[in-house]
Length: 288
Ligand SMILES: [Zn+2]
Image (cartoon, rainbow, N blue to C red; front, side, top):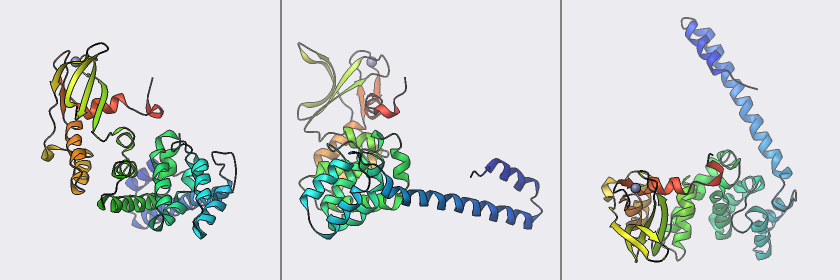
């Protein structure tokens, strides 16, 4: 079923004085949209028992979720990880189909929250990941709120949870690539001259340099961190979240990542975050 909005718009425009006709047209449009949504919802519900998981099985995941819902079974969680997020990264349609169940378990179960977050982190690794995730916006919002609450308690695994939060906010690139700034190096390409530039942020220093295999980082130029008040989203939000939770190193690193660097080869000044994003686009969105 398809709704031709162009045709609908034309019809509205040419019969503006005929309000009854307009109302009937809009009612019809609403009915057709509602029917389409219902069709999609039914497809999702039906799929739940039909979706093949990463191990090629159908129906095993719902059984496992029933099991962990009743009692704590470590083996069942191990199997769920294997079927839904193998090695912490391989996701399938079954993984996204399991998200609503995992989100329902997550408030009382750290395992469910971790697995659900890991699946969301893998969104761009699946060709239909974004569309599948878009089918459960309420669950994603709930998971994001739960992770945010955990972060406020300043847990020992803060950095991993911060990456989960970024993915749940749709920042997959930063979720996959943001370091902890203890001793981070990023290889980027200068947008001015295409020279490879090494960006260092951490205890080793905060600089842009040319990396020589026999001499290390030479021609170092100090990075120019963004002022907190200059930051724009997502940098502003990331910086504010880290600062709220007392993660000073992370907050400072974010100012450098969203700041500027001078190219040692051509002296042009460029935005580090933009160059970093270009250098680290996931394979699924690269174009050749
Ligand atoms: Zn350059």
